[in-house]
Image (cartoon, rainbow, N blue to C red):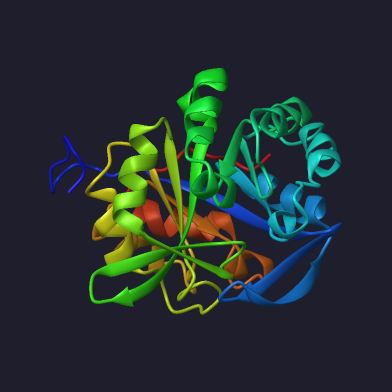
Length: 265
């Protein structure tokens, strides 16, 4: 159980819309593969903002293959009209890359592949911009009972790193938040990997965002109450309009979870 929490504490959670980007397009896959074009990322971002998303996550899902994040222009356009925190990840390999994305309008940067290759990057970004800006993105695949391995390059490359040990190291080096994506559950609509989220969240003092697998609004209840997630990142359920953020917020509120008050204009 996270430090300082009791079973009877009201959990306060954030509802985050996740947008995976390839080139100019919003895409969605299953297990981070078989990517389908959904539409214009900022049209969907605006929809989720107007529905009351607490935050947005933009991930350039092919950036690591090409060595550069291409989201700066998309983020600049979004920042004109969207006024909730935006996290941007994919292909961020240096403090200079992070600077460019933050200047474009992002509030946080998420780093995975480059952090595995050079863990010092976590510290460098954290020292320059503050730990609240440095999100450690972790793609996890289950390899044994109660054991998960870190993958990079959008779930393509094995690293040999144990997820829990890597997250603990990342936090010790300055990561202020964890974006934890279950490759096994991603796009499956079968619910979050609660055991994975719990294994990580009980070992660190920073917020953990659960990503991958949300199929229905009720899925967030288990990952918050049993997995101790601080936030849920949602994509498929929103893109295909199987639920909107207002509905999901109501489900959370009715279950006694703390959510941001939001009234539609």
